[in-house]
Length: 117
Image 1 (cartoon, rainbow, N blue to C red):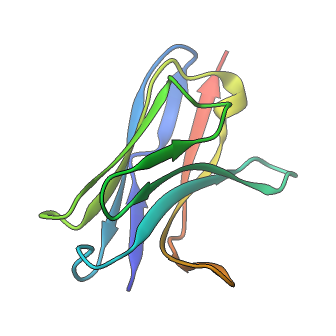
Image 2 (tube, rainbow, N blue to C red; image 1 turned 180 degrees about the horizontal axis):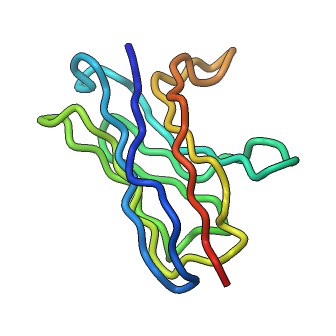
């Protein structure tokens, strides 16, 4: 399984971006997918997750502003980000196939999101 993120860029505070994560092969059988982010000099933080049956979870910092979704017909994971803040600036990574012991098994290379004030 290979994951390729896109959609990052530079946006002003209050703006929106939509990240995409294209998955090689079918995502129909993938149990869960998620988004993480890592700001410069900081640890990678979990942002949101979605299960195979569409149940979603969000970090408190993005709840109400970000929306995670998956399109099994297009083998793509999305993250709609609204009302962006400078503190959302980070490299965003998608991940797939949750393993209870080791976490997500597959990761993308990341896409940079920069929010200017």
